[in-house]
Length: 232
Image (cartoon, rainbow, N blue to C red):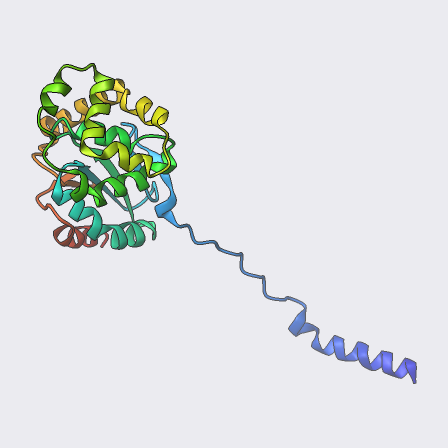
């Protein structure tokens, strides 16, 4: 009986072998990349988020004292960073643009610390702009003019409330003072601002390049369809 059962099982497997001899190859596991967390530095040293091989490269010229920039950042954050950038379709580069003296310490503070902190600083400064962007205290500008670079940047940051904002983000006074004293970075970004005006035709903020071409739009509502068209 055992021989009969064994023979029957062997016959059954033999009959079924054409169906099971070549099992389907398991599909390789795929992991979606959240490209909005992918940060690289451009050749100019600016922060770029997204897939470096994205079909569309967007450059944002941003001034931290520009109310339209704050509005743009608020409107675009979810659909741009959380949408097109996260999906790997668009890479976005943020280029600081100096419109006035207060932009300098604001930008130095945005870039304070490791690269991983930049985007949070960037959005925090813009999101709280209505709190700190105000007329300087009486006599402040005259006082600023008599100081060396580092103390001047610190004095502006304190008077405008930016220093307090960054302390609330976990920085120490020593860290903030070091960042505010980075004159080499400030001079580099000032040269970059001049080049944006002279070579690219940027006249105000926010301004945008799509794949190297300056766009005549100044907000998310007008920019979005241009990005979508560039993706077709």
